[in-house]
Length: 355
Image (cartoon, rainbow, N blue to C red; front, side):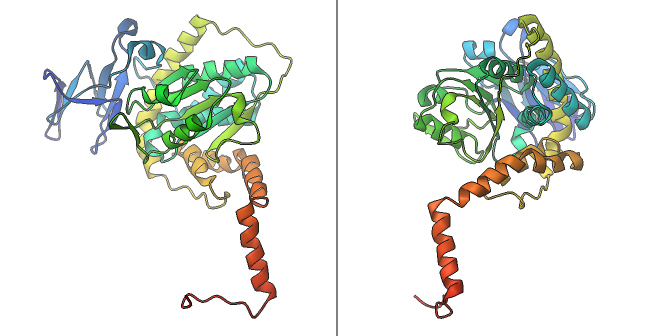
């Protein structure tokens, strides 16, 4: 393949750059593609009209090969094997909502939130802060089902449990996983590490190198719902028993849904990643700290202003809780007390020229 003077071929050199996906300045995209029979992944290069797939590719003089992923992780990792049309963003979001609602029984708002998390996993390179979906509530059967459904739908999803800081850092660098973490407790050290991993500009030192573990996170754990809540970059879905039986969702059904949606999600990523990188969403109406989450959720629907506007309603509860919490925060109380004192005492003044 040759375009605009750049040569793209299946690579034959022995060494090159390892990648979990690349977006080049000319708009071409390189993606991880699942190998046959759970074999090693391949790379697919797309230039808006042509696809080239090989175990390694050479583009503009540089060799690229798939990031090294340990085989046991690879067996659990969701990767597309092809690309197929996804329709419009509105249609794809609605289809994703329908699948989640039918299989998990979520209410309309919760299904919309979960669906946007799925779409955000596809355009993760366009956001600076990865959203975190926190699953709460006593209905563990539905909580487990939601995690299983999201594993089928999200990009590069991998299901994890008994995660420690050390084991988290052993995962492949730069793979842009969607981390589905389901375990009873998450200690403070792991919580802090996950917070760092949710920010694209933070690289984690580990054994003499810097790790890029940036990616969407889905957390199902008892310890995140106590008095110490998850940071403001998270949004919660409450799992309350409904008394309604869940439909069957065996391995064959999971495989069929994953195969279809991973192909459509790749199409969605191709069509919308550029627009998501250019989105200008005004999050100033949200309380301090919640704006990053709002911008990330809005970026999931970059070509539909009406869907972006819905983010205000989706985060209304979190915004109210955030504003209420600020009024009982000691630092906020101290600042307010100083302001009140200034207003009530005309003799008190402040000048930047005083030292």
